[in-house]
Image 1: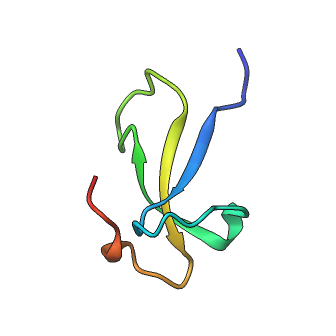
Image 2: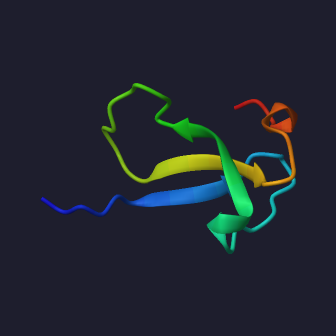
Amino acid sequence: MSSEIDMIFEDASGQGRPVDDPADWKICNSKPGPNQQITHFPVVFGVVGVSESCEDTVPE
């Protein structure tokens, strides 16, 4: 079994910004969500800049 997980990071602000360095972002949501089993890949993390609020994200 591989320890690698196929994942991508998407700008959750709705601005469509590229996430070039995940260290400059914080995770606000994910697909699948918390406490849900991963049944397909990639896992998608909705992120915003570290100085931004998750409250400003665009609803899915």
